[in-house]
Amino acid sequence: MDVLIVGADEVKPIKGVLKELGAKKITHWDARSENRVNKKSIPENVSCVVLLTSFLNHNSMKKIKQEAKKRNIPLVCAKRSVNCVYSEYCKVFGLKDKFNC
Image (cartoon, rainbow, N blue to C red):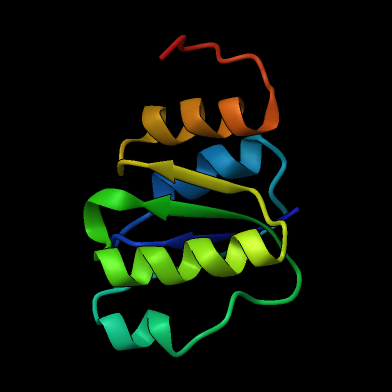
């Protein structure tokens, strides 16, 4: 599974968790500038999009959500906490959450 992470600057710990959950390739867009995200399309091979909502403006979030919905790509919305990303990913994909968040 290929995953796109949108938001935040440093996502190494989150990448580690996603790899444990089965992600093969992880792409990260930092979204510092609204134009960086709004001018891009979700890559064709992406199977899941993770939005780090604490570090993402509303317009960029809306654009990504609309495109993901149009293409039936699962969307995980979470804060930048590793546990939060893990918990929300488990909810979206119906996995057992070992942290019970």
